[in-house]
Length: 259
Image 1 (cartoon, rainbow, N blue to C red):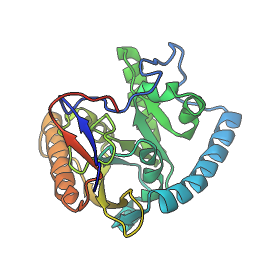
Image 2 (cartoon, one colour):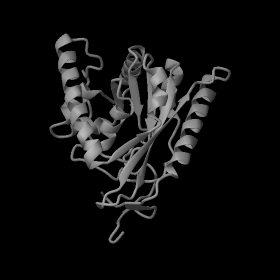
Image 3 (cartoon, one colour):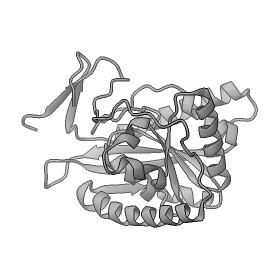
């Protein structure tokens, strides 16, 4: 590919995509769970509209294909967690909804996303759960996640945290977010986004592979369960990422370049 874009990075935690409200923080009185009937009604309406629009975006713009989605069928009546690699700025908002199309999804996101002009304030209605800064809010976030699992919903987590557009490998990530399936005693699945060169167009097509379930091992301590779950999903994603056959953007670990 001629004139391939190159992004330079220093660490795997570099934030190569930034927005104007990167330092946005949720308010102290942020409402984590909404029981108001009117709010929930409009939330459901907005979700349906977003789902329909995202179908066309994923199919005709991103050219997404999803493999092995049928393994989720046995968990239609259970809440579960979905872990993926973070490689699409907008697509990663929509793709999980089509991975588990028969279940409402809720996604753990950076607070900066809620500061986006226009769409930011609507994200909580679409299922965004922001990562808080305070201990008090962290407990509320955990309670929210547990509540959604009890309601048989899907919690989407991008453990790499920062989006690296079109990155074809799996970055190292901590086991922090893997405590949730342990505390909720719920199944986890991996969905790995890979890229291939299309016959027409510059941008690659996308194939998403779904794997699992990964279940907490109750024969070991909670800490060991968390580590084991992390290792199993990380290794699975690394293996699936080798199916990428096209590098649209090249990443070089030399110095940071702003996206």
